[in-house]
Image: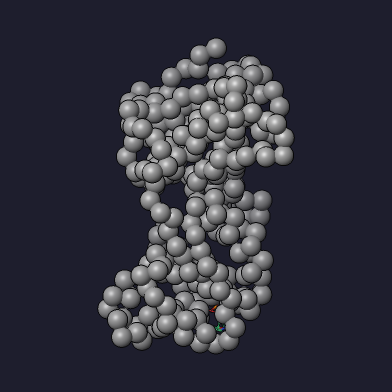
Length: 260
Ligand SMILES: Nc1ncnc2c1ncn2[C@@H]1O[C@H](COP(=O)(O)OP(=O)(O)OP(=O)(O)O)[C@@H](O)[C@H]1O
C-alpha cells in the first residue's frame, strides 16, 4: 500500500516503512519533510486515511536504540516530541507541553548493521532539521553534519520553592535535555552566594549557557557573578536561562507573560 503524498510544496527528504515498538505487528509509512514527520499506519489497516503529523518545531531530538540482549537484527529510532496539550489541572492558558515519544523498528534488511545505518540516517536527518541545518533529498546524511553537543551549566537550589526542584529536575529536565543531546553539568548550590562565586570562577569558553533551576534569587546571583568578573563585558554575553522552581518565580512569570 502506498501512502498519500505529503502536502504540496513539502519536499519528502526521507521515506520508509517501519514497524513500531512496543506495538508488535503494526507497520507505519514515515515521510520526513523539512517541517514535519508524517506517520501513516499501514497495518492494521485504518478505516480512514488518517495520518499523524508531528511538527518538527515540537521535536527536541531523536536517538537510535540498540537491543543488545537479543539476537534482534532490527534497529530502532525514537523521536521525542513535546506537543502542547490540554492539562488535566487547568493552569494559566490550560495548555502545557507533554512528552510524546514514538519508537520505530527498522527491519527491512537481513542484518543488523544495515538496519542500524537506516536508523542512524533517520535520526541524523531529524536532528539536522530540528537544529536548522539545511539538508535536501540529495544530501549524504551522516552524523558529521551535526555540531558538537552544546554544554550547559545547570545550577539548582535544592531548597528553593517547596524543595522539589531536584526531583522535578530529575524527572522532567534531565530526560529532556538528554533527548536533545545537550551535555550538562548539574551543580546543587550549598549556601547563599555559592552560585555567584561559582560563576565568577568558571571558564566561560567552556559553556554555551547557564541555567538557574530556582526562583529569582539564584538567577540574580548568576547575573551578579558574571558582572563581577574582570572580563564582565564578554562574560555577560553568556546565554542565561531560568527554569522556575522557586516560590514566587516572578521574573519567569513576567518573561513568559510578555512573550505571550
Ligand atoms: N543550599 C542553599 N541553602 C540556603 N540558601 C541557598 C542555597 N542555595 C541557594 N540559596 C539562596 O536561596 C536564595 C533564594 O533562592 P531561590 O530564588 O532559588 O528560591 P525562592 O526564594 O524560593 O524563590 P523566589 O525567588 O521565586 O521567591 C538564593 O538567593 C540563594 O542565595
